Length: 188
Image (cartoon, rainbow, N blue to C red; front, side):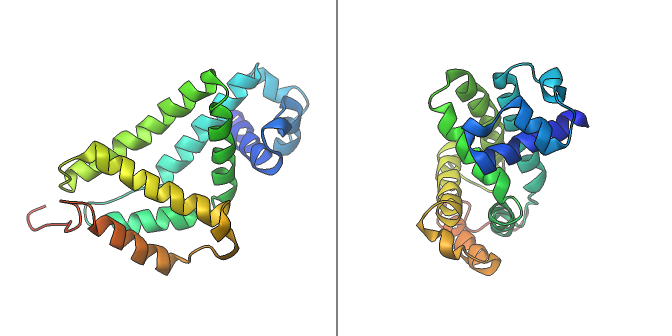
């Protein structure tokens, strides 16, 4: 439990202060722990970064559950939650992604964790009838990332879409994917 609270606090620190603000001491303060607690569980800054990135992935995995008949609505709910109640985690994810462009050790962790999400998405799209799940996964994730970035950090942040708009937009996008747009089909 303490490792989880440290990871959550690291995410909060990164979202609020950026990567430069991420120190063991700052995480101790944010988690309400005695000084030195964070360094006991994550000896190095790299270990602390890995804890936080893994926690983001764990929270994302838990927040996206899709049954075979609701791909678009589930994605819309995931997007809406990410830009509202999960906004802190989303901002931290952007910070980690940018930092990963400069730090190969973080890039490896970030990519490994992200690949799990991509693999799950590809499996889901394959079940939905996609003739090219890997390519459709790239398209879907790129579209979702674009919507999220625009709504939280981009020019669209002043008026992020409401859930109803996301439901409509997601349904329209999914309908464009060959083999997936008419999902669910009879017999599935």
